[in-house]
Amino acid sequence: MDEQRRAALQAWLNGPKISAMSLLSGGAIQQNWAVDVEIDGQPAQWVLRTDSAATLTHSRPRAEEFALLKAAFAAGVAVPEPLMLCEDTTIVGAPFFIMRRVYGIAAGFRVVKDATLAGGREQAVAALGRELARIHSVHEPLPFLAPHPPIPPMLRFVSEMRAHLDQGRRPRPVLEWGLRYLERHAPPSSDIVLCHNDFRTGNLMLNADGVAGVLDWEFAAYGDRHEDLGWFCARCWRFGSPHEAGGIGSRAALYAGYEAQSGHKVDDAQVRLWEIAATIRWAVIAISQAERHLSGAEENLELALTGHIVPELERDIILATT
Image 1 (cartoon, rainbow, N blue to C red):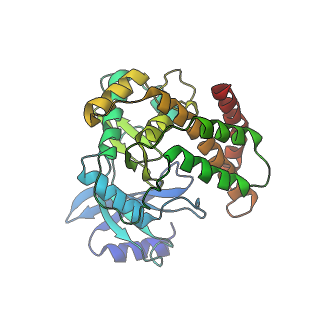
Image 2: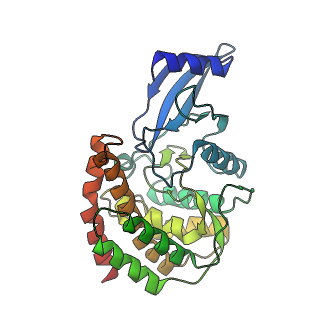
């Protein structure tokens, strides 16, 4: 962030004095800036979250993500406390919001190897199951979330993914095969809840005390509770670990934590169908991210390399459906 934008941010804050700013790692779709401030002589640590140069079309704008954070925080979900929102693009170049900084480990490749998780692996995934259940209990009105259509969530997912594939440069027969498999095995409509839609290792900050924060709410929408469970358990988010629940622990511990908090029985067969859906969805996102680089919209090595994971995801789809 250049000096002009930092000065504009300082003026907009109208009180708190910025003492340091630095760009945090990660965030291919959004930028996160660590912001140290002084308020009446007392230090405070914040994070400023704003858009990258190019975003995914289905990523929610910052104002909506801020509203989701507020609703989750009010429901007792372990999220960074949302503090202030700015939709004036003249301040830092794009809308942004500020939240309190939380501390812990989020990087997936580190989390799955961390031996200091609070209470051990099984307790950690049980705690994550409880957090997911709290998310699914959020009932605060969020008018910007479209009502769920009266068709089974899986069939809606299949329709949306096919629409994305139809816009692509090249045919993706394995992904189409996976969508047809899901279409044929789609479970009936179920309870519709608020889904995080990116609840996975890498977006979950853990520390020695437990779950420090559930991050990155830009894909939240109404859907099937098993969709979030399947996304968390999908092989693509285990970071090479043999543990089926996010690469951290067992399904049994995850399900137990979720069921204890929510009062709802987890249907393992539905979770496994949503794992296939998760693999397809991640492949579609990876294709879209690579396209941001290939189109010249945002030349970025990380985005370019993301496109190279698609064959591995296609292999996982074949193994899960044959």
